[in-house]
Each structure stands twice: as C-alpha cells, then as structure tokens.
Image 1: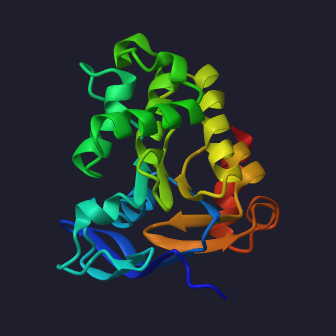
Image 2: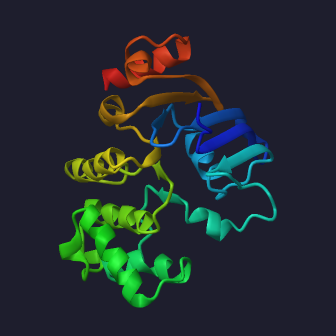
Length: 246
C-alpha cells in the first residue's frame, strides 16, 4: 500500500468552548477524489482548512506530500504551493484581470518571471475554458467564470492536492455545471482532490470515496454506492434520507 499523500491523524480543534473536530483521522491516496458530506456545523470546512494550516488544530498531525504542516520549521508558503484551495467565495482581486489574478501567486510565491508566469497562467485559464477571458476583470465575469478563474489560480501552481470548500454554493444553479465540469476534468487528469460540497449528484458520479461527518467526527466512509444506498450508521441513514427528500 502506497503512503497516502494526505494523512491527518487525531485532529482536535476548538473555537472557544466549541469542540469542532473530535479526533478526526483522514487519509487520501494519490489521485483519489474524496468527497466529505454532512450537516452544517459538522466540522467539514474546518477539517479542510486544517489540511493546509489555514486553521491550526490543538492536537494531532497533518502530513501532506511528505511535509509535516504542524512542524514549526515548515515553510507554510512553500508547502501551500503543493495544496491548492478553492473557496466558496472566489477571493479574486477586482482591479486585476483574470490573468493577473492567476499569475500573482506564480510571481510572488513561485518566483516566476512575468513571461513564465503569463505562459503558465494562460495554460491554466485554457484548462478551465477561459483563455478568451484572460483580459476581463472579475466584475465582467459571471460567478461561474469567477470560480473557474479561482480554480485556474490554484492549479497554475501545479499543486499535488486540491481542496474544494463548497465551490458551487455561492453560484446560481445554472452556473454550477460549468464549475463541476472543470472539477471533473481535473479528476480525469489525475489530480488528488478533497471536496466539501452539497453536490450529491457529483459525489455519486465522480468520487472514489464519500466521507460522512457529523458532530466533529467521521461517522462512516465508503464508496458512493455504499454511503448513498446502503449506509450502515443510523446518523448517515438519517442524513441521506433527508437530502434525498429535497
């Protein structure tokens, strides 16, 4: 068995008196797409943010691509180049073009020349189907296009792992498909992905494994068919039956 590219062990995280993660273990194999589902407040986004040290757990360990993210000696900026993250809000700079948003980290974090950054940025925009919008500012793009620019910005750094935190929840329904299509293409290219989302159809179709979280713990995990059709835990069954009614 190959060493997992993501290994989180016994993670505990508090926000004040609130115990958000209660000893979570998660391993992700290279090229695997792991989908994390669960009710609001179950700790899904906090777990994701611990995987790239946007949040620091009080205890436990996080190792991504061989880098111990909780080691004080770790250069987090360097480590984060290997871990792409796409958020619910697009976090684009409104005064910069799509290409400018994508190339900023290539120049500032990866130290590329402007020419090299522009070439890599255009290649990333091409991958998300937006090469023809490179000169547009975010205000001239739809929400779905802005989110695809945010994905391009992350993949331009050639990360080893991509984290998606509710990437479609801020989008109008008709724009969701274009973002999921880009994620599906990334998946087919072999990108390792951890996705927190309510897009259950996408989870069924694309995930290798579905992880169900509730109350700060992983309750159950398995192949999509197992989790959606024959979950073994009562809490999973209740959640699945609730979402299938909607």
